[in-house]
Amino acid sequence: AKEHGGNRYEVADPDSDARAITRHGLTNRLPEALERGEFFVEYQPLIGLEDGAVLGAEALVRWGHPVHGVLGPDQFIPLAESTGQIVPLGRWVLEQAARQAREWQLDHPGGSCAPRVNVNLSPIQLHHRDLVAEIAGVLEETGLPPGALCLEVTESALIGADEDALKPLRRIADLGVAIALDDFGTGYSNLSSLRWLPVSVLKLDRAFTRGMRRHPADPVDLKIVEGIVSLAHSLDLTVTVEGVETRTQAEHLRALGCDHGQGWYYARPGPPEHLHHLSLADAG
Ligand code: C2E
Ligand code: CA
Ligand code: CA
Ligand code: CA
Image (cartoon, rainbow, N blue to C red; front, side):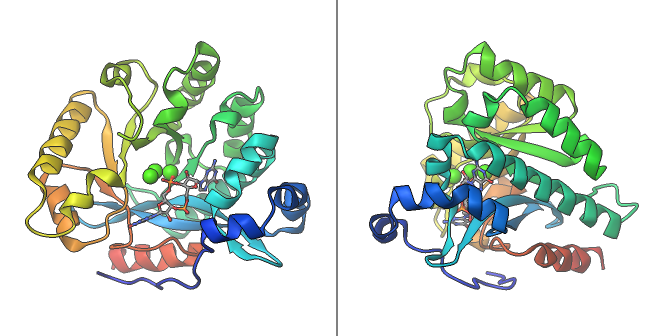
């Protein structure tokens, strides 16, 4: 596999660390950490499977903790959600990502496929009444065209979602912002819900592609992905696959008609400059 920059550090192991880092200690310090600039955003490239072009990136937040080192989102997002601190944190990530995407666009003018950015949205944020206005505000302040932003909402967050959660999503979609159904296939979604959810991208969980890492691929996995792709395309949805780790997987997914891929085979999450190099390389 191609290695672009590689892994500069290992995200701490959540199991061993959860015991050492008390829940209380982390949540208490979160607002202060945000103020002090301890959070940072890494970007993982999104690749067009057809031609290998870099289309943009997903923003993934990290906490550079002064004592515990770099913490991955699994170690603090659930805490931030339970205390409501995800609201200011999520807003900060969105601002960073939008500003960064705008910068990429200004650096690569004239392209028909201006770089885009995907940002994860917690279900807690969906219930925050200022969300839509904040998104509109961030787009206006940064000058990022709405079509260059995609918000990822997990399937589980939308299962059984009531009107209160769907209304802001529809208003966000009306702004021209794309909405992706993240971790698709891990929940138990009713496939028919795809008809009325304001979603334009399906992000297939990597569980589906595990059986395609090597030849011969698991025939059942191939069939399932083939079926999902055909359903998604018939509903005009773009299919992105996460967790592409090998060349074999990438080849299978392209042959199955998946649109976009993301994973270690292409690039690990990294600093924004990292994407810049990839984009430049592809343009040349
Ligand atoms: P996700 O949205 O499913 O993001 C993909 C995760 O898979 C990322 O983990 C990414 O580093 C990892 N990954 C990427 N490529 C590969 C691959 O080829 N193989 C494998 N095994 N893993 C790969 P990460 O960065 O630890 O993020 C974990 C989760 O934390 C994310 O899952 C997302 O749900 C959440 N998260 C991250 N940033 C934010 C944020 O700003 N806000 C919210 N609400 N959640 C976030
Ligand atoms: Ca995601
Ligand atoms: Ca995902
Ligand atoms: Ca996932």
